[in-house]
Image (tube, rainbow, N blue to C red):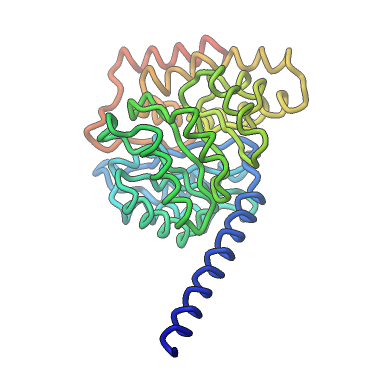
Length: 326
């Protein structure tokens, strides 16, 4: 009889803890307003390819003066696949310590396995992240159908102490998070939104439409389609170009949210070519070179990424100068 009462008491405690945890997660996700512009910050390295924390600190002081909603740390532009777990967590800890408290820190915690993602998510939360950005696992992409991805993200969201933002970046992973999976995951109390870097505006609009009954927010994953994303219901953007032209992207956000569409369209058009240059065309090495031109510390990439050659550097400069930025 005693064993029965003990088991019943334990089971009741587990159920109570589970309800309280889910209630806490739901409240946390509901309170987290993602709207605004975020640079997915670059990771500065020394010439020996060590993380250059002094240069990172200097960039952070400058970013703190720009009206960003927050920073994404250990996103694709942070070269996170090339960092050790210890480096990834330390960069997040450093950012949280130096960034003003009113700016969000969204930390990339995605790994290939659910187990590893949960472990890194816990460490990112302990380092001060306000939310985690979780990329789709992709090494076995042929098996990553909606069922597998829903189970993965659900496990992560169930175990995370901070809200989760889904991350679909098919150009890097070769895998797009299916709309039906996003819709199902939008119902989870600890999943706050989606960063969609695919650039398919009809898809973004459909996701906004199908999740409108949920407290779910969509962020554009690139500056090249930021205005279009706002038009179909996105609430902000995580944009590589914000590392370079952060104030201008915040201006574009302000123009869109205030309905000044003619001015927004003119600004958006001038951002398309430089954005393409530092993303799909020339990538992270171009982003880091452009940061140097605009007074930030980009520096070298960690190998095997190579620096731009002379022709690429000249092309990058043309993409900025022909649009009036240099």
